[in-house]
Length: 106
Length: 120
Image 1 (cartoon, chains in turn cyan, brown):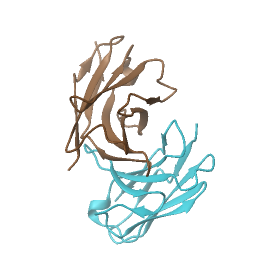
Image 2 (cartoon, rainbow over the protein chains, first blue to last red):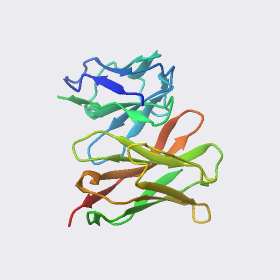
Image 3 (cartoon, chains in turn orange, brown):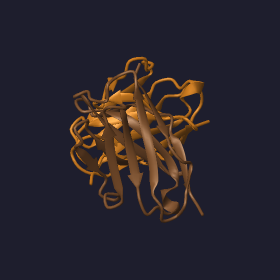
Image 4 (cartoon, one colour):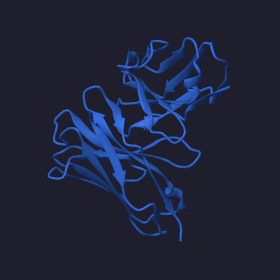
C-alpha cells in the first residue's frame, strides 16, 4: 500500500496568513494526487486534482504543486471560510489511501 | 447536477451486517467514465477508502476490509450498495458514497454521509 503522510497535523493561523501543507507519498505516484477540504458535518470537497489542477469554483488562493513523492497545498491568504481539515489522497494505485489530515485552525 | 444520497440503518448490532445504499440522481450510474465508491470516517479519525464498483459489476476493495465487504450495483434503479458483515464497534463511522472519475482519479461529488453506529 502507498502511505500518505501529511504535515503538519495541525496549524494555527490567522486570516490573511499564507498556509502551506505538505503531503509525502511512500512511493512515486507521479501526479496522481488529490486535495480535499472537509468541514465538520459536511462531506469532503475536491479542491485540486492531478496535484495542481484547481477545480471549477475553487478560489484561486488555493494552489497545489509537486510530483513524484512530495506535494504541497498552499492557501495564499487565509479566509475565515478556509478553517477546515485538509486531506491529500493518492490515486496512483489501489488501495486508494488518504493522508491523516491537516487541521487549519485559528 | 449529479447528486448522491446514502440511506440505511443508523444503528447496527455487533456481529451483524451493515447495509447502506447510495442513490445517484442527475445522471446515469452506467456511465463508462465513472466508478462508484464508498469511503468512511470513524469519529475523530481520518478517511478510509472501502472500495468501489463499475457499472458492469467490476469491484475493487480495500484489502483491510476485503473479507467482510461486498459492493453491488443496480443499474435499473441507479443505486449501488455496501454490505459490511461481522461488524464491531470499530466500524462505527460516517459512511460516504462518492463518484470516482476513472480518468482524473478523484472522488467528486460525495454524498452527505450517513452515520452508522455499531452497538448492542
